[in-house]
Image 1 (cartoon, helix red, strand yellow):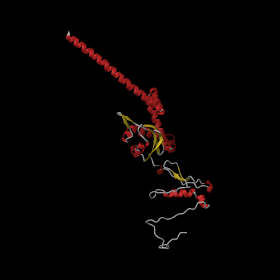
Image 2 (cartoon, rainbow, N blue to C red; image 1 turned 135 degrees about the vertical axis):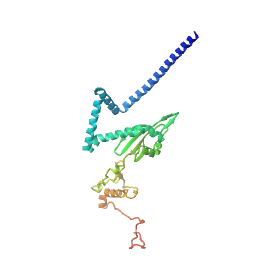
Image 3 (cartoon, helix red, strand yellow; image 1 turned 90 degrees about the horizontal axis):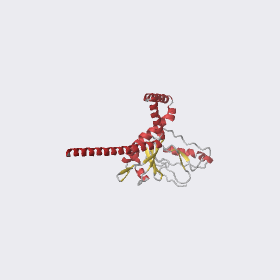
Image 4 (cartoon, rainbow, N blue to C red; image 1 turned 45 degrees about the vertical axis):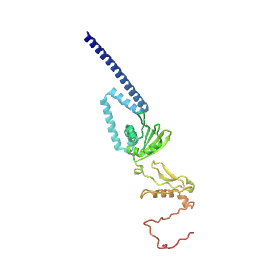
Length: 294
């Protein structure tokens, strides 16, 4: 009788344990499913184009089968290759630039974002939880990528300015600059290709007359963002410095072109002076002769 009682109690305990374990598994699976559903819903809302494309692809596979879908994709890839070979400019304008933009946005930035933020020291740890700055926007350009970042509480724009070179190397960019966009938001600009290795900067256009000169905006050329670069001629001083063959002369040349009509009619007088250097030689006609002012 005692043995039967023990056996019945063991069976009852085992049954109750399995019921409790099943309940825990169901609760755990429900939480995981709810989190995944919320994650998918959030991604579908915040990335409508990707969600629509995935939905269309999944629907096509369900309706016509994966074999036909793969065949259609193969035809599209082959047609794109022919188009690219025949007219590269048109292909890049309509398809190529979009593909590069999509690749850089998802593969270069969003895929590695959390890891890069952690290794560059831009995360905030509070009570054992790691808070990662949010990448709220990515705008790709031909030469620059603009990353809009929502900074975490406890951070300031100077934190990102100090980590600019780390971010540049992390994303394999040529240059990086940081500026504050709004409270709790910064913009990190990353140059992924030097524009001046691929773009021809034309000489500044000469005004038709002195009256057409904008004295506050004499054109010098283009900035590294390929925006118009100007300088005022009224008030202050302008100094140009740079290494050998860096293009200093083009700045002076563009200033002269911008002032050409005023120089021609005598409104502006240009004065050039040679600065003595290691390679300069004294003029034998004036050597040892004192120069009097006036």
